Length: 153
Image 1 (cartoon, rainbow, N blue to C red):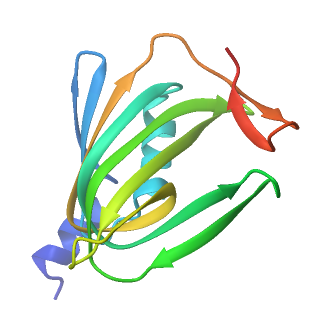
Image 2 (spheres, rainbow, N blue to C red):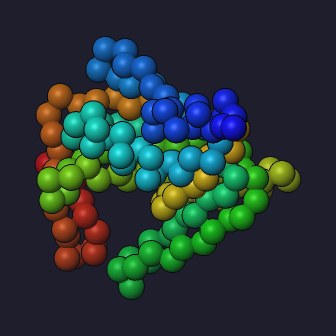
């Protein structure tokens, strides 16, 4: 016999959201992977460009530091419960698909903070995000000078 929780998870949308004007408020629930789920949402809603802000909790997070001299990211996964005190980022287009670029500040049980480029995180109790949708699509282009995809303005 299926439990109500099992049935609920089968029919539940990828992310709970509400549109208000040119913005979306999103609620991610425990266990969801933020970047993966957000990327799916952007494709479903055909959101091409926007600005992101958010906060919440994480079961784990993978952050990165970009070494400009090496033109490479150094990744570090923090495998413990974290408070997500700030998420800031943007949505642009790269090769015709939404490209998510987020930086995060998280802290552990002892209030030690970590910050960097967010590769992914697993949501703890909840994570709340706001997307301000831009009216004009913004593209990214590869910069050989710095080794990154930069805004094409």
